[in-house]
Image 1 (cartoon, helix red, strand yellow):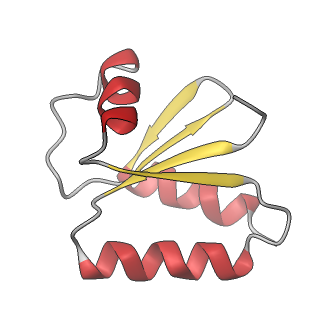
Image 2: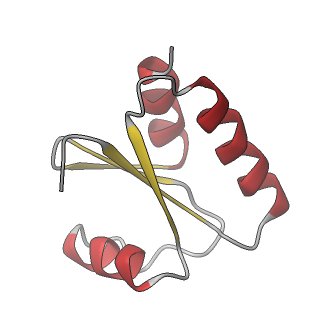
Length: 82
């Protein structure tokens, strides 16, 4: 994988999808890639970073081999946006 950050989100949540659209519109440098929680890629990353116990109401950021969850993830994303 390249040096982009991975955002894992609930793919069936309208609020979550709205947040992802907000990020995409402001991510002019294409720093992020996205994976819905329901995908195999997200499940594998969650297992790798030991966050498989999180419910579907979470927001996860994988950045520089570190995992951020919920508010910490959101704050990291905001700091990386243009």
